[in-house]
Length: 297
Image (tube, rainbow, N blue to C red):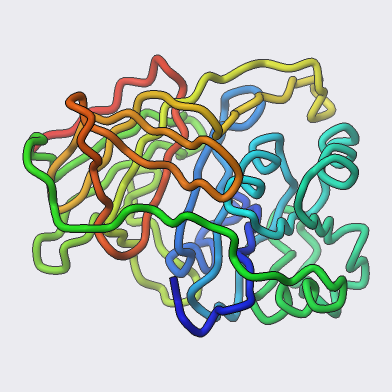
């Protein structure tokens, strides 16, 4: 963790992945990025965990989902999103063990913690780490990060060559994901909808040291999320399950385990040996149990 951040907690921000929202801002500057399926299983959404870097623009910010209840608790983070369905909002505001800023309610003029650019609800709202730190200070909820971090270290033995990866998120919305390993930088270059996935802040392609596919049961709830009656999906990031960890051009079959709040997932090989992550940034794709992720060398 960044030594300059003593006394500060991570912050999770919900980020849109509609066609109109691309390129998103700040997605290459998060310490950890999550992507996950939305209700209806037609498109993905992102949530970034921001801690180490100062980021001038993050967005477009969109609404929270049930996964954010587990995610922000896991990272002992503050959570900032723009709206949520009534029951999800109630859960986050009244029941969650972390501060939640619903920008629609808590910064309606978009002048203190956020900015509004244009009028399209899908793309207009952005925030920044400075604005988010101001929010935590104003509310008196800033605190030191109460985290057991990921395990980082050198590449373990075993694994299979994996210089390209494909994750079968829905193609109709251009949500399908692939990565190509770049040996020069030691990072995986990210592609979204068949094109390089760019960060609007830099114009550069997103590149990460670790790609993690975290298999999680997708439990349909009775919470209505939209005007079509689509039902919310519960994605619980606590417990354990299958994972694939990719680093240094190699894929490792793993089991993920997160026991309690602040207990970031650890990854274990079949023999029980821990699989450390490469120091750097990680992108976690939360996948249904039946997703066939392909990779090869």
